[in-house]
Length: 159
Image 1 (tube, rainbow, N blue to C red):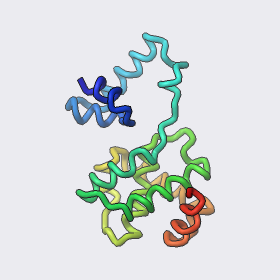
Image 2 (image 1 turned 180 degrees about the vertical axis):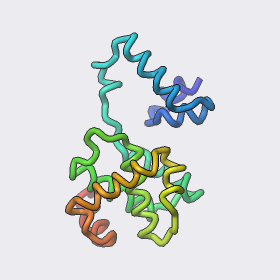
Image 3 (image 1 turned 180 degrees about the horizontal axis):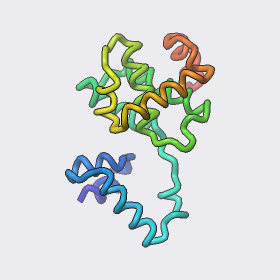
């Protein structure tokens, strides 16, 4: 089963991954998941409460968008996500929206002409959510930096 394989591989998965694999609407699957958590009283369980790090999904989303792995785009997106986390943009938000905004900025900065619709189809958020994350990032101190400077300064602090 997909759940067993997910636990065995110890990799991070989003609900949308199970939805795609099972060919079920993510909203239906999410509703069932929430009901199950309520019935089993898992609201306080650390697994349910644990925040998911958006950077776990950048490489996968990059590969889905570009059709291949691109370390330059992925590395830039990872630096942008790290900056978002430092600016507390991660708090209270789903990782897909942050990944989408970071991937959109990174892809454009590397000369890939993808539209917001292209990003939305990969990260499975609505275009309004993507636009909100882009505006939120623009309003941070890091949002006013050039991508080259952001990558140079922000990522050097990760090493």
